[in-house]
Amino acid sequence: MIFEAKDLKIYYKTKKGFVKAVDNISLSVEKGQTVGLVGESGCGKSTFGQGILRILPPSTFYSGSLKIENQELLGIPESSMRKIRGKKIGMIFQDPMTSLNPVMRIEKLFYETLRTHEPEITEEEARKRTAKVLEKVGIEPERMREYSFQFSGGMRQRVMIALTLVLNPLLVIADEPTTSLDVIVQAQIMNLLNELRKEYDMSMILITHDLGVVAEMADKICVMYAGHIVEEALSEDLYYRPKHPYTELLLKSIPNTNINDLELKYIPGSPPDLLNPPIGCRFAPRCPYKKEICEKKVPPTVKVDKTKVKCWLYSEVEQ
Image 1 (spheres, one colour):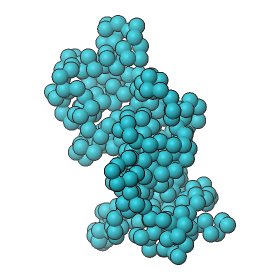
Image 2 (cartoon, one colour):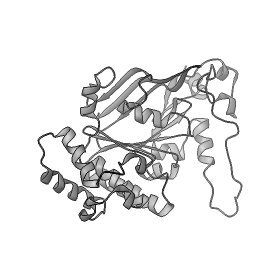
Image 3 (cartoon, one colour):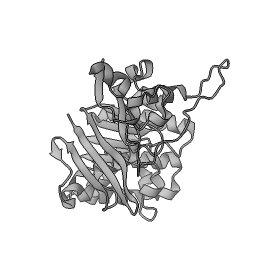
Image 4 (cartoon, rainbow, N blue to C red):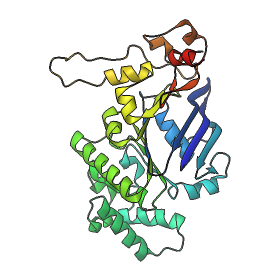
């Protein structure tokens, strides 16, 4: 196992109290595996991704366990964490323009990244490695002398992917890597990511709203709602045999291209306020199968066939 989060809590400290953005979740990633993390905006997906790297505000509260190759990440000093960021865990952010320094040439960005983890590296060696990885993502090595603002959105994202891959990390967190791109470029970037993941034998956590993308790329999918993972299943099982009501409604919300069924389906209501989440199941206020116990107690996570599901519909049967 490359990565494991166990009973992880990540709370934001505010003047009104703690925002329970990630609340007691567990997730593991095997070597070479892609795990999809899906759910509505505000459910805690990006907080989880950034929390793994510990790049959230200093006042953020963590508890539980985060391990990469059995090395615990919570509680270790910042100096140790710097050696892990990039080298063992890489991250591709939503908007490459805010991640790439606009006043630094591309080759300088790569040199600084490499020198941070390999202090003895020469500029010439760094230039060769930069050229090689840029070619992998479809960018001519000559363009490393340019600045990030001279590239299009799709090309900037390719640079960001190359910057992540140059250190050959064990795990890559791709946080909605195609959000700001048009549909054609989105497909190109996702295909590129998938090919490079296989070539470099990397593990990946793919954070996205797009259920179509994870269907093609992910081996396993975790559905997140209001800080909880409510369902974890193999991709095929989740799409054809969803267990949790939220997963079922999410899949029904995907626009249908069948001309005989043009009605746009949606999930009524809104996700709860994570400053004061519901006492019981967090999806209960929006759930069509709600029962009395759902509003009183948080359901345990149980295994149904090969799927893990956090729902009283199955928990009572198990008990």
